[in-house]
Image 1 (cartoon, helix red, strand yellow):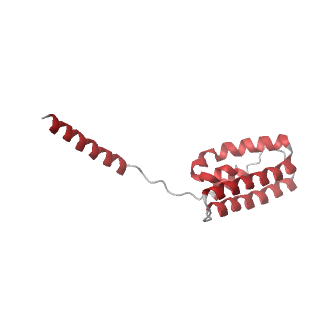
Image 2 (spheres, one colour):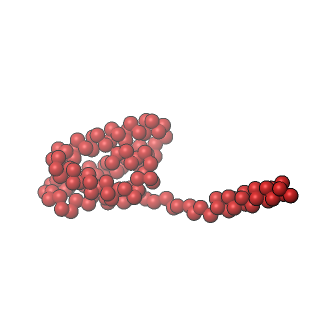
Image 3 (cartoon, helix red, strand yellow):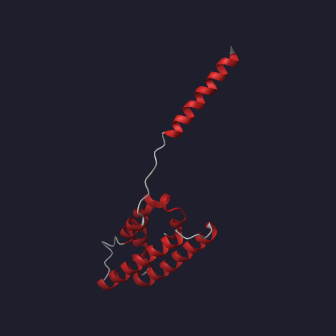
Length: 129
């Protein structure tokens, strides 16, 4: 009798485990370059000149393109990680020269808050931010 109850519990548990697995919804892929570049272009309140805004938006577009080139490449994860960290370093140097340290801090904080919901979807690319 104990064996029958144990077997029934095992079968019952396996059935629900399979059902729970089947209930996991699939998440549609997003077009991440759009929200990524949109978040990078949120510059309200920074007080940038029109020339600075133009340079920043151009750099944001090329930065986003570079991120997705690396992300979609066939390189190993270790190589991609190094490439993302190099992109981040290059970008931070550009932004420091364009904005200065105080505005850069405000800008990075704003971008970080806007990118936060996408970090899991970005995977290794999140290292670039």
